[in-house]
Image (cartoon, rainbow, N blue to C red; front, side, top):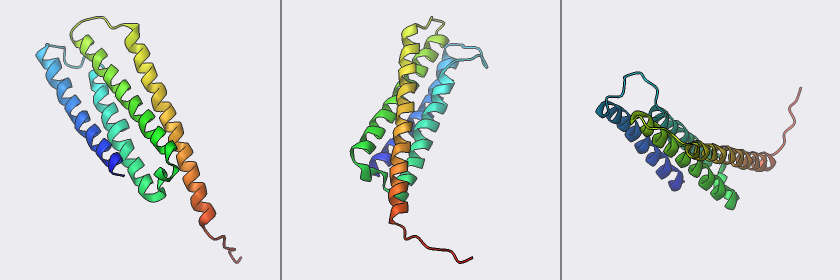
Length: 148
């Protein structure tokens, strides 16, 4: 549980910091206010996918002990975090190039796509963990008949 809490805290710090970077970097480079750059998306991705989702997983861990699945939980944690880092990193990279007036490459889009694939795989692993935990929990509950 400490690992989840620390990761959520780190993503909160990175999310807030990326928002500050977005504001200051665009102002320092005279980027037109209101013009689109992916830097703002990095801020929301880090806060939502990193901070908020991992806080929810922390609550689910407390409720269902998801980590009881051992290796599967470890796979979820690693794959999901790789997805958040790759996706957010490419948003910052691409957004910075946009602010600087430079062209982006197909490589950035490919890496971002890989990040999204990892996020998706992480979410699938999370639902496998949840299904196992809920199934384990419901099989441990005594079945009662309700009188009509």
